[in-house]
Length: 282
Ligand code: SF4
Ligand code: SF4
Ligand code: FES
Image (tube, rainbow, N blue to C red; front, side):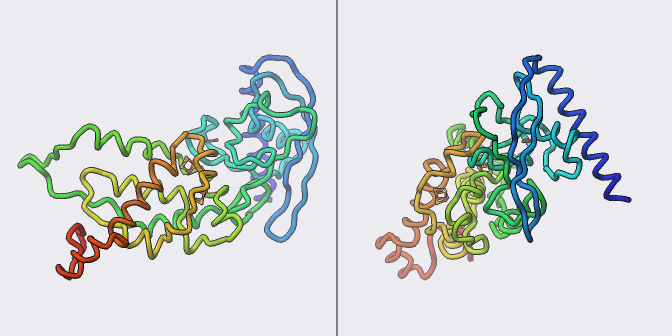
């Protein structure tokens, strides 16, 4: 009974969202076929649905419409429909994308439009995957630790250029599309060993923060296995926030790791001082 009520709520919410979108979208209606993945971790298959679409609709609108018309129990995760919550990640025609930001007029209408869940994460049901490994891994990255305040009133002084450097990383909406496309996670399933591009962006945000005093390079090398990344740049290509993941986050982190742990001069200094001179760790 509870699941019937839930299905009715889900379908009602989807129908209202699709109707709102149709009102603002215009009226040139045509029928399209959507090939949507249905199933759970045990088994699944693609199923074809036909629905009327109109100008301006996005894939999420079509999925909501299908949910209200013919698949009341279709599971799909979404929240904002504005490209800001990172919930509606899926693979559309084989490409990792946000359903709410993918306009139908960007897609080929000659063949069915495929919509399937992200393949790098365990499937829960239909289009919904379990992305909790990302949140677990995030806890393993040592948190922001600022130096003591620079002034008696408890404030700090920072150069604007240093502040600007990390702003790009703060745009991340945790959609995990970059994790989905990374071959280390997607093909080799090394979720417990490699943190992946999203969390390397998070680590870069902390490492490059002008106030942070923690040295995470040892963790990046041994615990988060940054060395597994071979700079294919696939993650950068799919980021809906256009964060330059590889060039601005991963490569500078790799350089810091190399400087700290492989530079012969630095290693010699370490030997003499019995302690990494640049490290905040005791
Ligand atoms: S550049 Fe590195 S993190 Fe990004 S997809 Fe390629 S291997 Fe993964
Ligand atoms: S870095 Fe980009 S692709 Fe990766 S989770 Fe953040 S917003 Fe999504
Ligand atoms: S529904 Fe929030 S990003 Fe798509």
